[in-house]
Image (cartoon, rainbow over all chains, first blue to last red; front, side, top):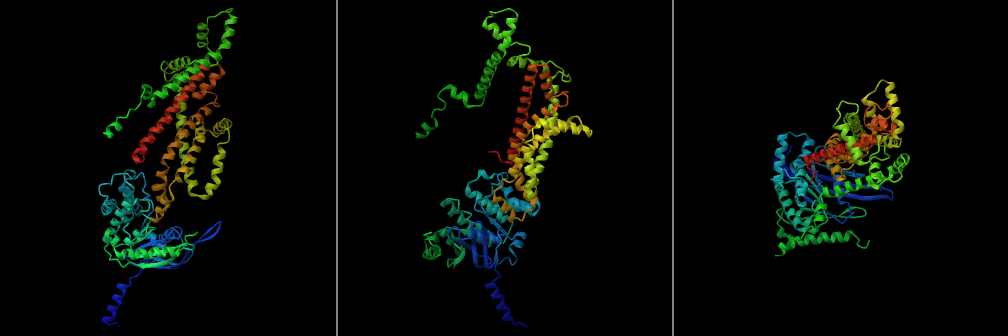
Length: 276
Length: 308
């Protein structure tokens, strides 16, 4: 028999420690190649809470993209355990628990923007009316209303990437996985999209896992920054951001911001020997 | 000010540049060159026989212009002059009833029907094979070598066999000829479609994986649209090959009808003008069919939004 205060404590506890969206324990992934095994990921422990914006940052070869692909069930770990929404990554993929945004927009050139957003919805077998509603809603969300009938080649790189984010959101997942989505864009467009992505995250309250190798981008967007280092790919540091949830681009000049950026930079330096 | 001087920079300083910038100019030049070479070759190749004719007639001193005119007006020249061929084509198309056995249109129609049937069967077979090869490792390993081997057999050797075997089982008429076209046409379609169906980027395949798309959905929504430009390119080659197949297929049937029959009959009786008119007709047919596929390609790609 529980007393009222005990239940309250339990609730409070649950509020503070909700079930993680992604729970990774002792996870390793080794690729077998002709030159012997490559330890892409080694002994990763990580929990990502609902509503978190988590960035994976590290030099190339640190396994940040591989880790994201493991979460998306695009790679299988060779050891350890991982759950996404409390189930295996495969089951989560089958449940369409996440939307994935690739480095390139990967829009289909023969489909208009609206039809590109409709692609996952067609595969899910949604009704035409439901599809149309979701296309409208998500294109508005990424400020692409009015571009429904355009083809990808008629849009700029930044707009294409926004369309691909709308496509990922249209599935209505609680989790958004983004693999260096703005890596190919110039600094000005990137700042702009970072701002838009932040607002989108604040509006939709989704959990976002974001791979990047830009320190300002990681610090500006994240509530949690995971610094990875290579050979073997492992977690070097996990930084909980002390910045308020609501971010503005001006914040990047603040002392707080620079302090976090400094810690990330130190982590990258320590985890990576630059002489090789 | 700079804008104005930039935009009005002179283009095409001589009238010749303007003429050659479109397609008409260059095409006309090439056609004229071909005719010039053709006439020169006709005079040269027909001259020895003409010399003999004049000698037999006892005329030793023939004026040059009469001699040249005579080489271009022989009944059975080694190489007929272009105007002889065109007069023959005119006489056997416009001046003959279409149902007449001497009408080139009648013969072209026969060849065209077996070309088209063979082409359709070949394209269907080619796509089918490609789909199997792309989706099954076993088929890829086992079928592809045979597909390639099939094309190393000379078609001229296997064509009579196909006709004879099919005749023996009671199949005659259009189908055996079409089969030879099919045999030639399926190969470029298979090779092109295998390449096309495998052309989607890894990132696109990964995308379909994240959507948990079935193989059928991936095929219909990703692989097939990606393969469409490849299909049209292969179909152009397949169509030309199909026409060759139809003509070859008409040779062993005893030269009853079709452009192949005209070629064979022409060579029996030394009717070089007839051979050349059939050849030109075949070339015209092939050109038109390939151009037709080109038009279909343009329309399809435009409707798919892939043409810019």
